[in-house]
Image (cartoon, rainbow, N blue to C red; front, side):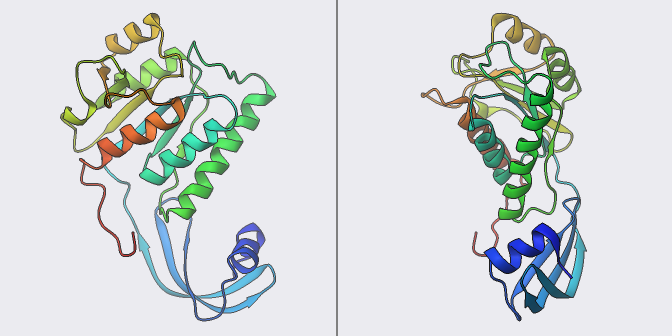
Length: 231
């Protein structure tokens, strides 16, 4: 039986009815392939046809996303989730206009987490991405130091992101700076920790879209992407 918010969405918004197929996931790799046997307002009765467990994808993609202003943060999270980011870290970079302090930090992270969850369901992911706590430069540097490969996007870099050799396992950490770019202090700290400055192309992208473009370039070369029916 599917009840609560998910049941209401399935029965009222999507209007699923008896005989239709639906997959149910816990967001941690387990998927139940089901068919609807009955539908009522706010709930569905499901018959489980099969269960499967999908292993975590390798290599993992960690996006260090500088916090954009307004609702562009949720947009960045949605797009990163749809292409396959595994961890999204809100980065309080020096030139970020938006700053999360006090209660606002918890509320903002909750909005990002909800955006990730909704996007994961829409894109039929068995694993939902983690939205980590807001990170300062020191926390970002620690992520970079632990990575199998770390990239900091830089439109002036001589190296193209598409030309980098990629690891087959471990974490690929992608640092996406704010609209004004990373500061010299941040750039020096990231490079000292092992991050490679890399460019995406001839144009400068917004902070809310640069991450998804870079993630697409990277993940399309890792073997994680495969054709799926209807996709």
